[in-house]
Image (cartoon, rainbow, N blue to C red):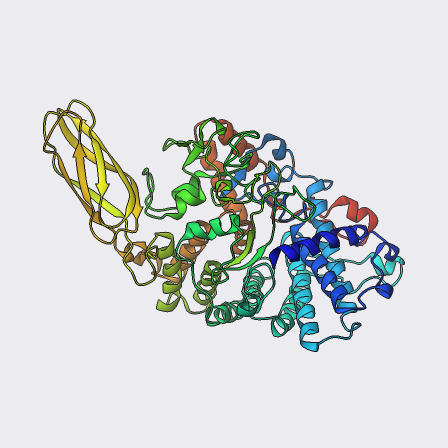
Length: 618
């Protein structure tokens, strides 16, 4: 199904090539409805042209992946060339990427308007007609959501221009609140028309669950800055709850597998509700690859090991993001999300498949690890294009949005605390042996006897207990083992493993392990003592779970914490030891100002539409 869908997408790219601009072109450039949309097939092709907007070079295919000024407290782009522009808060009103973002979204809006204006032309089954209308309404609304959340007031265009007269194409901006109202109106209508997730059965197409979940997100944005409509918290809770009670959705038992699935074109609609589809490596005419895992992957040189795949490794974490995973300041974390989201290794020489672990003080040098090209099964692995999909809505996000909305209404209660703890328990690997089964990690290793006669460091082996992956190192002093340090806590243990200490010339050293319990993953009492405490806990949990998925900037803006958090990161980076990546981070976090809460309206667009108003500070 996916391959056929993407072949159509390619045809639409060619068919709609003349529709690149909207607000600055005359109707003569548009696909004429007079000789099209006569059949159901043509209507579906038009819908596919709306979908293909998401896969634009200017959006999720390329520019938004680590290069679009979405850097916040979670990470930054460490490519010097990109820092002279939007990625380093060094953007101008003539920035090509910002212009491309604006134009791609309005092109998608125009395509949607054409479909909606001609939705009743073909003779066809009314239920199928309704599905096309619903998907189109939702996608148009989503494009407006992307625009209003980055530019604020934007022109609200709900029909194609009738003439080339200025009053038809040079539209003034609509207040952000009114744009949001239209977004929710379209999405709510769409929710009544599109199929449920079980019928759709793959994340590349809009379903009721996708609409409800994104509506929850939109309502949270409306409840926050700059609209500040607090009544929308109740609506956000309602829409998130509809996803939760739909009956299909649950978390994948493995956080890691969520992203392996994206690399291997596997759909898991229980967790991944909506995603941007890419396929192939662009080696044939019938593929449409993206740059997921290429732009935001683990660095590997072009021409390096072909089993890994090229990535310039643009995206790097902040020290704050790394330390947000508990425990802090140690070589391992029981939160398994940390070393998956932030790769704990590099490939030797950035040229092989040999993994070399980073030193504990090498944080800025690490890469985003969520989209690992080593997991791709499409061969050969191209340097430019990848088949990996990109998530737009995951079920863990829905659980966290539900908790956030309900906390603002009721404060911390058991039900919403449990929703957050479910996300955390999955992150800590508690479900790796299946829901309801025991799956623990090594929590401590106690040295029972230091032994004697040790002249070199002995080897520590942790085995048994039906788990794997746990490692530790020994320290010796005065011929005795003086300490055992866990370097990896492992996972899937059902019973306590055995710790064996061998070699080093000595004897009799013994140690005993203990395991974590499922409640070790849960929020602590101080995290839920008050509404404010729980709010902070949820905000931090969103960073741990959803980092690098292009959600953090919008979250910080709606919480009114964008400048506060970037200021804190600037202080942290300034105090850190010099390295190439740390120095690039300092460039990024030294450039931001209050104006960066919004992007500039592209000067090109203001030139062709003088009714547009530039955002403050630009």
